[in-house]
Length: 564
Image (cartoon, rainbow, N blue to C red; front, side, top):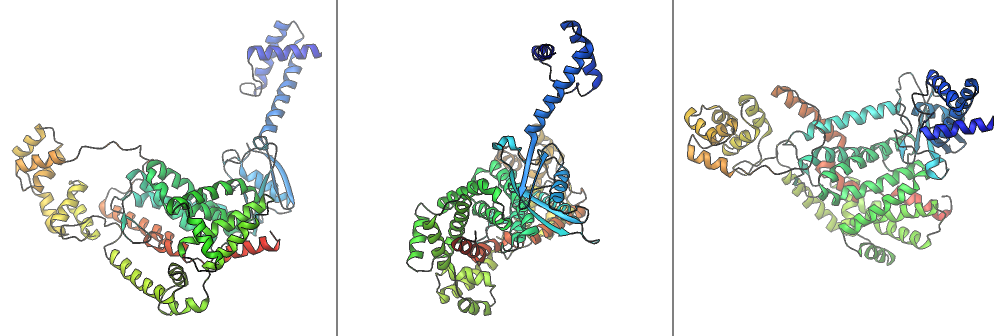
């Protein structure tokens, strides 16, 4: 019998037949193969069929072993196939913990990823044990009771991310929407292919920070934070791929630190490899943003008991998080712990110093950030806050964010005027509308009159015969008052189209009617700017420079006391 089994196996290898793949999931196909091999091997068909069935089951068992993942955590360890939907894994973990997914929301994070129900574990990027030298994956579980009026938090979070991302796409499709520098309030030009992913990244980063809060809540909020922040990271990578210069954005370095903070809030030890990679990226970003002696300069000042400026907030976070990663690896890192402690002390400012600035109308974060920028000097901090508020107000004294073009008198094109011109001159190109508004200093009626004025058909025919597009020729004639020579010169001066990087997938279609289109853009703008919580208008800088660092202090104290 064993010799027949070996002969069947050898024949399968010779014919390169893989019994674990279709069409051999159909029993009739296996029977047909057994009949063929029985004739070739001159053996009873029944015996050959039995060996084929046994070999197929053995192959499937080995394949299953390669797809198994062990999910481990406090008080549970379960093995499931990565080919199964996330809902099956969630139910298995819940059962191991004595929870019922019918009565409780069980949220699971492993390797920095939040588990979703519909996709398989493999599709979600959860690696099988075989790819990690047989080691299981450490997971963190957050459970909340279900109530009649409470929807599934994972479904709600996924739907919220989809809603925000779609609004970002709609807003980014409007060429007049502008992004502002967080420190100065000035408009920042971004390559068209990077606009949509950058807006999505900034918005998701802001939402992730909002969900994370001070980092002390953990549980379900930290799960939400991880999902938002990982979405932001993926979108930032798309933006950088489209426009490599964005790699130097401070937001990208801050994002790496925020993700590791979220891992710490979750207590997610399985993410230590990813955390170390992100901390290395954050360190490189800080060195690139400042200089090679950035760390030594800050640490030396802190060791001498001096207050350090706000620029060292990211360094303090980095040092604390590196201490956490080292402790997760079983390392002591005494010197780094001492440096981290000194940096936190050097960045702390008392309530007595913050309160007078609050009484001037500034938020605690803004006051704390100003004190740090002034290295503890209260008078300098108050003056800086007053000057900064005036500068930002001047930079933002403009129409709604969609108004991004400068008119002839130096002002920005009024959003309402542009909307009127779109409705009144539907056949004109967008660039012609903008040019007309610039020439007429935002006078919508004058711009519409120019854009809808008839053109000389003879002059138009002459320009078209020279190779110009009809619409471009019409715009040029209207812009030059019908002067054919000036129109021809204007067409020749137009820059040739420049090769552009491959654009991302197109954003959702906007309504074709101008009024509906404007309404859709306004709704998207309000949603995105609300979700950003002012991050595009400067609050992001205050959020970083004025943060209270209590979460970092708690982590470091836990390390020093041995609790972590």
